Length: 288
View 1 (tube, rainbow, N blue to C red):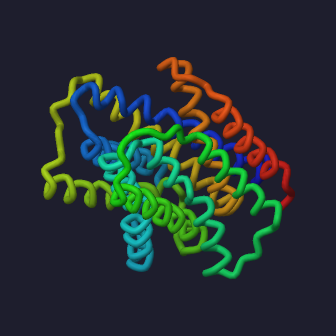
View 2 (cartoon, one colour):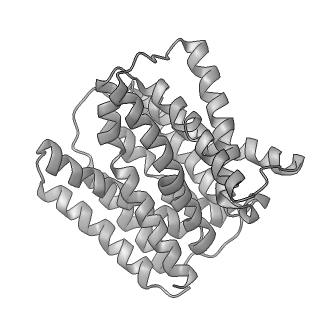
C-alpha cells in the first residue's frame, strides 16, 4: 500500500468513526453524563492505554521543551479548544447548525494554507471544497432557536480546527510518532477540560456502569481510530485533503440516524451526500 492510499483510508476510517459519536454520546447522556464530563473523560481515560502502549513497545514519552511548547499551542488553540467551543455551542444553537458551521474548517484550512503559507491550491481542490460546503449546508434541516453567541462559538470552532489541521502538518510535531503526540495532547486536553469543568461546576460523574463503559470505549477508539486516523491523514496526504475527506463524517451520522433512529432521508440530504461523495472520489483519484 502506498502512502497516499494509507492516508485516504485512515482519514475515511477516522471520519466514519466520528460519525458514530452522536450515538455513543446519547447513550452516555442517558446514563447520567453530560457534555463537560464526556469531553474530560474522552481525554483522561485514554491516557492509561496510551501509556501502557508506549511502555510495552519501548517508546520513550520524553519531549523537549520546544516540542512541549508546540504541544501546548496545538492543543489549547486547536485540538482541545475545538472540543470546548463545539460542546458549548450546542447549549445555544441546534446541534445540526453547530455542526454545519463547524464544518467550514476545510475552507478555513485551504484559505489558511494559501494566505499564511503561500501554497498554491489547484482549481480541482477548490472545486472539491465548494462541493463539501454545498453538501454540509444541504444536511442542515433548520429549526430551533438561533443565538448569535452560539453561531460565533461554532464559527470559532471551525477556525481552531482549521488551525489544528494546518499546524499539525507544519510544526516540528509532524516528525513525532503520532501516538506519542496524542498522549501529550490528551493529558494537556484533560487538564484544560478539568479546570473548565471545576470552575464552571459542569461536571457530573454520577453515571451508570453502561455510561462509564461507553466512555472508556469512546476514549480508546477516539485515540486509536479517530484522532490517530486523522493525524495519519495529515501526515500522508496533507492538511487540505484530510480536511475535505473528513466531511465524510456527517454522512455516517446521517446513515446511523436513519438506521437506528428511523430519521427521514430527504432529497436534500441525498444531494448533500452525493456532493461530498463526488468530492471524495475526486480527491482519491487526484495524483499528487
